[in-house]
Image 1 (cartoon, rainbow, N blue to C red):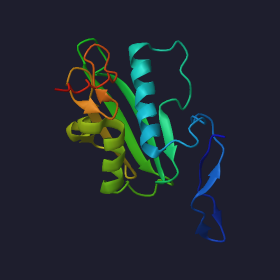
Image 2: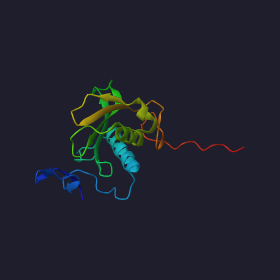
Image 3: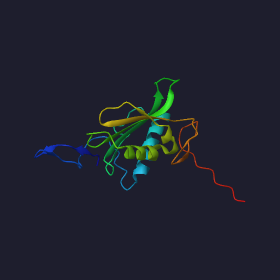
Image 4: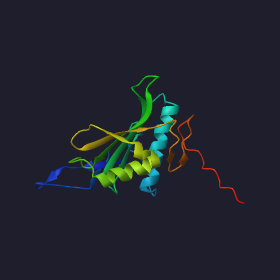
Length: 166
């Protein structure tokens, strides 16, 4: 069942970690690790970039990581949005509830899980008081991600070559 953090007040204190329903979160990720869910989020962004859907599914590019108390949104597009724009990912990371920006260690963990080596090329953008926003290069960079080297023609992972035996 899709959920969001409920920050309602009772008796003057905020209830943290109480969840309420909301539309949009992918509900089929039970049992997967945080890293696996972040890789799937990136894969959905890649799929929609390469073959844009005619109807956009709400929440398809958003993931609540309850274990970390974070919400992650990830899209892939050309910036600026025109044919000669740079192929990049835009990722927004916020704490839930959004009272202050996520800690550096949490942010780096999310970036590394979603982008592998490409996380080193992430550039932080100005964000609001409770979010951290980054642009991460995609496409023809030859960087690797947790799924293997990125293919320049699609931006999707390709299998790593098997080592030769002598």
